[in-house]
Length: 198
Image 1 (tube, rainbow, N blue to C red):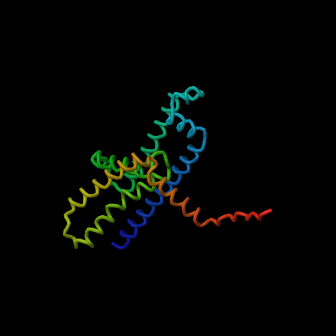
Image 2: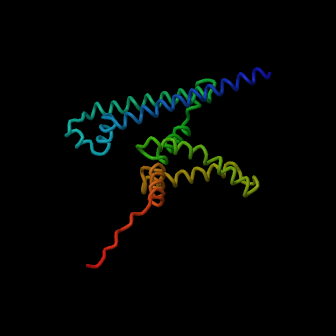
Image 3: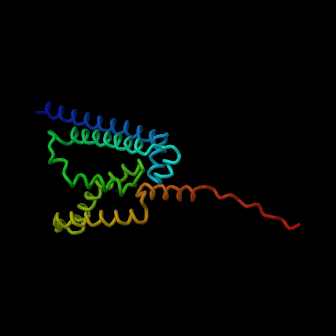
């Protein structure tokens, strides 16, 4: 029994190492693509496709390229998800709730940002845990799980509306603004030389 437990734990650790390695490789690939000509073409078509086409960018090729690469990322992500959490591939595991969770991660984290995907995923996964902990501590477990789930959906919906209206770049942009303010506060202020009267 102990040998079986150690073997399963070893396999679990190996699974997470494979997932982390695959995620790191895909992140590096995405950063390189966004910084290169491919990413610049995508952003040009996203901002104004007519102007991008007038500059010689092929709309059909760029959109097909974005669709193909997005499909590749989704396929690899689904394979890693099934490899880590599922023992068998079934359509029931990939329901509409999971699709909405992925969409919420992208919107809340920040549209068009790579770091926003990680921030949004962390928020979507950790917020229900924090909400359950707060409910158990403050109300001593008297709050029903359905009520907590409803509050969770309301908070997600309100945050999505607010971010889409006021900050489409999501939490990634907010984090960058906070870091910029902290750097500006910690930076030494330049002394203005005093002018002596002539």
